[in-house]
Image (tube, rainbow, N blue to C red; front, side, top):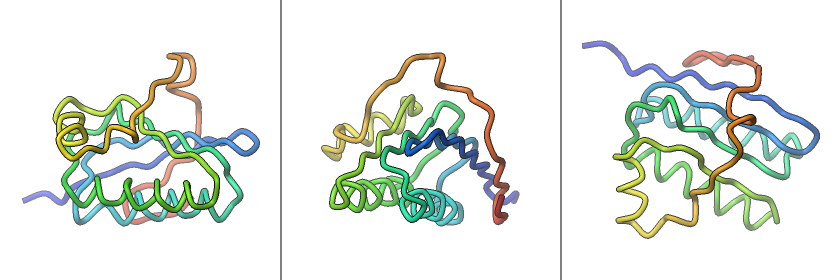
Amino acid sequence: MALPQLNVYRHERGTRALITLAGEIDLATAPLVRTALAECQSDGIRSIDVDLTAVTFCDVSGLNTFLLAYRFATEADRTLRLHHPPQSMTRVIEITGSRFLLHSFPAADVRPRGILVAAGGTP
């Protein structure tokens, strides 16, 4: 059985960051997401947008990671928004009452060039 793969890309401009995730978010890869989001906050990023267009799977550990990061961001007067989740993830977000995580942004902002962080790696 192949291990889940998740690629994390970070692109920032001033105090805004776009985190683009590609692959599966589960118990094995959620720590990569958690680290990327925590680093944004510790680096002084005020607004974090997470593009989920290329996410193929997200389990409850991934959702919990986003909910915890949202709580920390809100407590620090910062924002965290999820964009373009797969339909299955949208359904789970709606069922759990977590729709407040979802937002959309202009298509021009979806694919900026960024820094690649491979599963288990650092930039």
